[in-house]
Length: 403
View 1: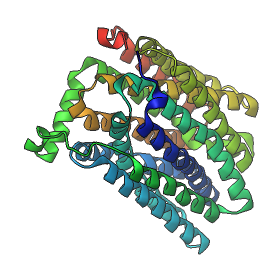
View 2 (view 1 turned 30 degrees about the vertical axis):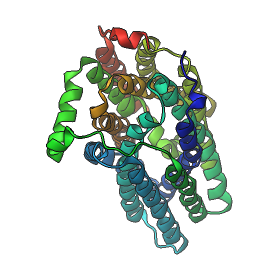
View 3 (view 1 turned 90 degrees about the horizontal axis):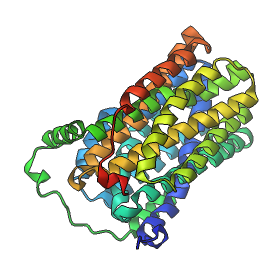
View 4 (view 1 turned 90 degrees about the vertical axis):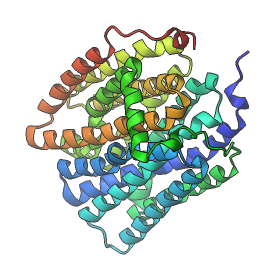
């Protein structure tokens, strides 16, 4: 009889802290995006902000992944969550003192991006230690629901804080959101023994190479990484420049930005709820349709100027992105060997998060120089083609079909 995920006490304890930190993440993202748009009114600067916040995952994510397979994961999570809170608190003080310009925001975006890339590598390898293997797909789906519920509520909170209290207060709230996570991480009961006796015989960079070789040697994992790359870079890029779209396309303010971000959150929540009932065998066709649908929605976006239809399209893009993210992560988690989990999942995280950074930069530059009609059509068609190539003629192993 399968064990209920609600009996996984360590996992439920961790969720209690994550509820607050994910709220802080989305409040921070919206606040920084709105601040740099207010300072520059440039899609390229907005795209650069998203790029610096998420691209470090591509550069240093694999390094952190190799480290995670060697260190105490709970202690590392405590250090990184504390660092993220301190960065937000320092930025809040600088904003209060009126010492912030666009370059300062980019510098903090880079620091936050590096710290987040470390925490993500730790989190992706920590969760399998908190939940049993049979409940892993449900845990991934629940994480997605929690993350995207915050995507719905966080922008609303950020919009109210920015409008009535100011940017400094919003960033102070972000710093406070990391306190419960740090406390919860200290309460987790984990087996601290290191399972890396084999890895200790290798050098650090040999560990990284071994992780890459393992991922590339698996047809299933390689195709799943291709699929998440198409979804993150092409299908999700528009979501990273919403502050610009609000003003340029709809001539509206921060409240409309909150609505668009909340629409994205609702779409992702619905996707997470649906996927929590899916078997591994049903995940793959859902991911394929999700990635292809992302491209088609982008094409549709280029033909509409209605804010209401824009809300629906943004919600649909987020729905599809969540389907791809949850599905690929679930299938990789249950198929990767334990000794390679930190490195392979950091590679997945690098593509998923860093791909969003590349997509934001791509959309920002293309829309500024080519316009909002050309960019979604071109990127959308590329997304459809790559998603089709990544998912054709692939068969899941029998052990995953029964999962």
